[in-house]
Image (cartoon, rainbow, N blue to C red; front, side, top):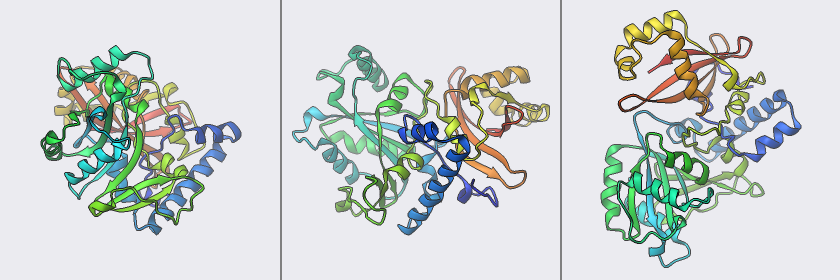
Length: 362
């Protein structure tokens, strides 16, 4: 178990990725939750030690590993048929990094627009709808498109990339994927975590049979970047960003297990909002409650609205608070009234009361 002296960023597990993670499935098959908890805690502490040996503080990765309400996420779309090179991904990345600010921390997720649902018509309509165009004359098949997904992007960087990439012939367009959509759900299933950019440093994964004192190259060194790499088991578990998804691919029971072996399926837990907290939200957080159209609802209705959205999203900023040894985490909730709004909610996990207790909503 992680022993938190204070609730600082050094004590937080920013995110744990258990989506389709065979390593965790194998652990759970052979071990009980107490043993899984000990294993995860050991791996996490070892991860921080390895990163520190490479000159990277785990705390510096927060914005690459957690969703934000202030920064956006973007999807860059490229037509790889316009690139006469089997290494089209590196060609695209090279052009992108010639025009990317050296400062900033981001996760990069990449991949072809593959068809895992056997429905080319739907894939085409999803992409064109988000691009805001009626048609793409050279559209042949979905996997002709190569995607780069970047998180923690400012509006100024978004506009800069859109302008700079406009002269690159394979560039099709860029989509702001801050809010949920059918396309964003689909991306969460097909894109792979490629690397993290921390200012002028690239952090990537390498095979588990390669020692952690080795740093494999990324191909971006020619642009002045230093590359550090770490074994897959550490990267996939604790350094892989998760795209928000409204579909049922939750791995929250593994996230909780990183803090405690006392596990209840979050989908079966009650959302609890105290009368005092509810009155505070209505009287002191009037602006956000008004935007969400929640001013005239009851506490039970608010609990139900939160529960309906918490089931298919993920927990992040996992920590143990020293004040009462409670288990706390955050989640981003999106509500659609006249327009889409995102709020950040913090919860305390209580296994014995079978509830998630709302701490704050903003």
